[in-house]
Image 1: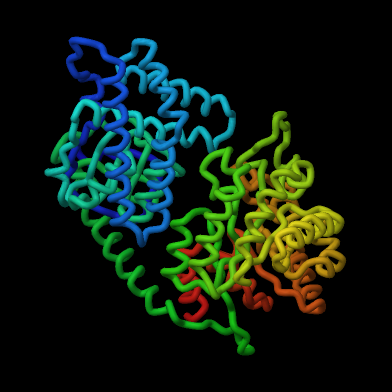
Image 2 (image 1 turned 90 degrees about the horizontal axis):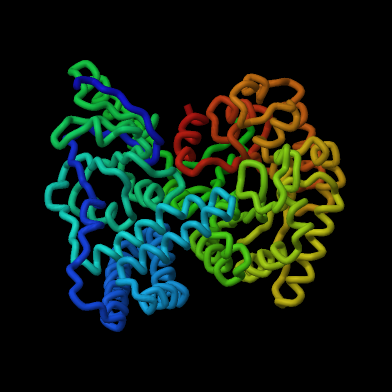
Length: 530
């Protein structure tokens, strides 16, 4: 099989060419130990020992990767699950009913996964693979199964699915890339891959039936493609692409400490957008001027965390402390539409439904819990808050009133509160909204789709989303004029801030502050300085 090309999900950027090494981590799962006499106390002890062994191993990983915030937080969440009394009691109760500990674990995890799957939201479903891995590790530990990583050095790993621990151990043993048959771009495994900067493609259909040990393989982590046994022409093409990507990446580093100014000498600032802890690391690596947008709904790992103030506080505080003394802007939860949707009833048109500030004002217990966590985080003075999907000035006033109440109860000064302008009504009310806001952030992704009446996730109408349209540019300019007059800071967020061509147009129009994808900050600086 020469030059066979397959597509999957682009997980971690980069290009790598190497020999394949197949790993099968599931093959020993059904090889249960011999059990001559069933003793429930022995079974409980085995379960306990397996749990404690995994916890000790996880703590070792945390100690080794303590400088990697996202790896640390992921492993900590796995430890919390292993230490949960519900897991212990649930498995022990099943053992008391006559099940050996492996069977009890299988049944408990199957029931738990069914509960998650029935939750009906995408965030919970992503957790299924991560929970499955913990089950496999427990059963392997009980049966003294050890995975062999001795032959992975300088190899491209090919397997069905990868666990966080497996990725870290494979990385430690010198693997250069990952390809899997299953997996998602939001799983713990994908986040770890990006954190380690290892080229990876997940979700490649029929992968294991098409590739064998020592086949040569190319991973294109930019496009999500792999090539099995490439011909000379393809190999040469990818080597050139690999060299060019490496050179370009190195050239960006020259701009890390460079300050960019427009033609009249005003400083142009690049803030970062944060979706996860990997984005935070990239923000620090690329020396952003601060964090312009934290999408808080993407930081919670489980639905339960939305209702846990201390869990939220720990996440927010870690971000605020990491960027200090630079500022960080946390956007309040923007549930609904293409994000996590907590609405009980299905909406026919969620883009125009109960989302953003509308949802928060209908569910004040969620809003107040988040405000408590965020205002506690703001005690060092570098935290700002942002209200999503505002339609009317009254919504800004209502949020400020509730935030003021929370601040008074905590005896902490209320942080600056800004408004995200992403609806035509907010744009038309900018004079009134600017009066009530400490700063303005333009969410160009949503503002464009509502302005042009074209769903930004619909391929059939994407040509209507034209940032160069004169009337749309005039809309942005009108917002800018009002903010300048009211002396309110204005930040441009969204895809057009991260795109070189649209950025250059906006700079020419006098815009100075941009919140962008952190990995593109140095490229954008380089673009403006050409």
